[in-house]
Length: 85
Image (cartoon, rainbow, N blue to C red; front, side):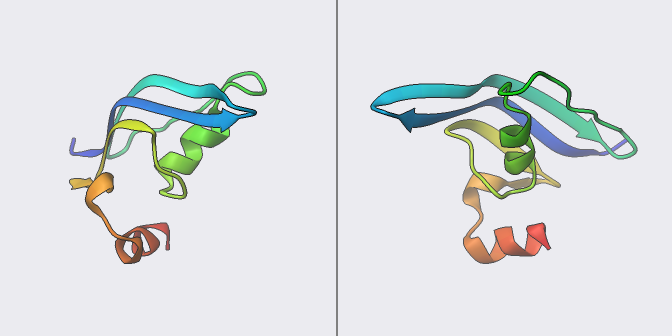
């Protein structure tokens, strides 16, 4: 099956009251055509943050995200909006 999504070493952190809050740490994920995914975890575990990155609504602090052969970090706002549509 063809790979449609690949994430390597995805990290996301926010600055909160002068402190760095690490929400995602070194997430690796690969999905191929026909795969199903459930994202489960307790409140505050980073589920929404991960889904926002997958949906191109947010960008990771570090790591590599390739969606249908396109490195998301190389796309401009027009391309990202097209993906979100």
